[in-house]
Length: 198
Image 1: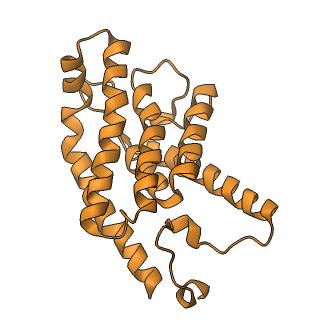
Image 2: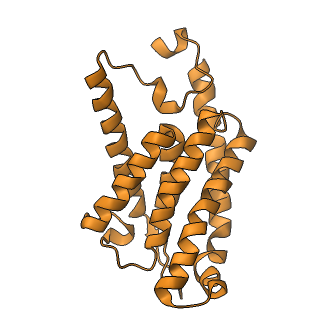
């Protein structure tokens, strides 16, 4: 495999290890495909959705997907990918949780937070944060905090409830699941790098 014969760049993200395009246009097409693919993966993961009684925020796979997309693509492509996911969903593509779309959902703030989180974890991945379990878990925790930093205040505004009540509805019930997602990423991403080094 061509990857094995070439030293891995220290500031690379996983997407950088794909075969290089022969032309500038080819590189741009490849980046567009990665951006669109990341948005589509997030949209598919959003359909893995479980309603949480008493909360307008379901448990979905989209948070995990958004963090992995940002980490694998890097900050620039990650932000573009999750930005595409957000804008297309607001425009009517039914790929938010439970095949929903639009911009009136109380949980839209979390989707806006995905864009911020993708930039953050992508920038951390460029600095090697996805190459060891502890650093990967820390990057995922920081990415999740970025999502909550937008999602919970937006939820409070959308529902016209105090921030503390929004945290009860849209933060505390999800912390255990987020810890599990961080643990999964902490195993998967460093393993991917380890396999590529071989």
